[in-house]
Length: 196
Image 1 (cartoon, helix red, strand yellow):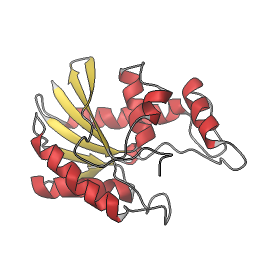
Image 2 (cartoon, helix red, strand yellow):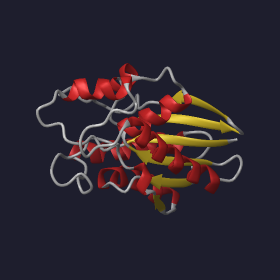
Image 3 (cartoon, one colour):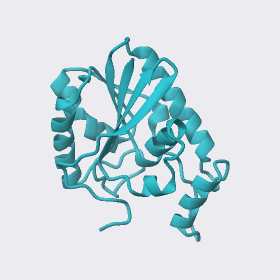
Image 4 (tube, helix red, strand yellow):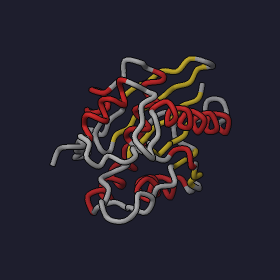
């Protein structure tokens, strides 16, 4: 049995490039609060992996420091590339993405493409974990939702919309079986995309 905690980052700044955007002051505080939750989870986290995007790294840094372990950066954990939404209703495009996993916008990825690279990242992590061990995996809302959908097909558009920022999900791998569980961030003031 191997366990992975999928963590959605805290509130991100809207300034800078997609890769370099950091966290707001609120996001920095959320990162500290996530660390307090992660410290108490069972099984205990031993390894830490992250998307290469700065807001993700800044969210997972406190737990990595607490564990005195390095953050292993995995390029394939970066967020799904939406593509060019100019002149389009973003919500409609997001819904379409959940209805048709092959649809994509110019310069963007389809849900199937993003799922495929996310699962290859997860496979790397699983192979890096010894039996009975546990990892924290820092990623992004849409990518995490696509991973969860893969293991639990009932997780769809409405569940994705109801994810909070930050958020935590647990996947337990038992040979070929995978169990998905929502851990959440009850002790943290979270928000949902689209809310103020």
